[in-house]
Image 1 (cartoon, helix red, strand yellow):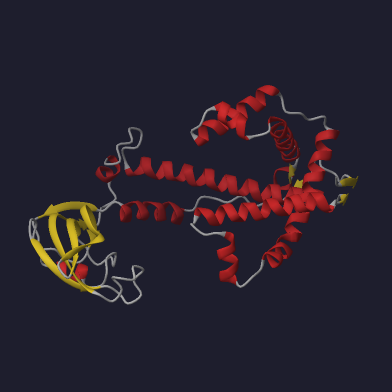
Image 2 (cartoon, rainbow, N blue to C red):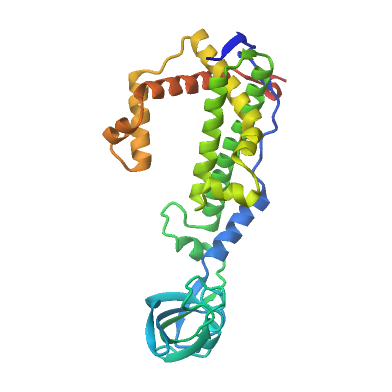
Length: 319
């Protein structure tokens, strides 16, 4: 276990952070994004043009025989999006609603299905619906189309967006304040780190990175291969951060002891309930997956960190 030789001052730590204001340009950017993401949509009979969204049935044939994976029904395809193989969308230009047309295309040489790579095929396509999109206009009618009872006007929307941006900035500012406070406490403390705690922190950082990559459909090993790096090099790169985290953890545990902070059963139960709700599972399922005692320790550490932040002093307010 790591040992705190000297616990730095953690009460009344001073910080000087400029809070982030909500700027008019930010609100306007959000409004512009809403307009761009919600164009006016109008059905038409045709002809199909670049930019139109078509609802189609299609089936692909090679040498007159349907091939696997080449059929779809009720598929929405934006003409010009490049979603289908070259030549498919361009040959649909000019089609009318209800029309069926044979499209002669050739799969790319590097196509993932070997038997189709570089091969000429025919797609029989039927257009069921053609939708053309035109830019929306930011006005009260546009705002009301979202069916939010408390937001009926552009001014209502601006106010809501301002509140959301202010909340996001406040969260970011709090994180910056915490970084300043805890960096000062870490610098003012002396800790003898154990190899075990550093290794545990290192594994946590690697697992966090692994989980983030998995969300994007990539394995850590694939990422390292792309970067031309090894696991040893990654560990070396993450080591300073892991050491800092281990030191911070030891300091927080020391503050927990010094202030006699503990997590109550009620607080732990509330945490379990929140975890269950956010993951759409039962509380019993959560309890089966976690160690309740570990959760108590983690929540006590959280309370200790809040204690430090709540007792910190904003130099600007002090002045």
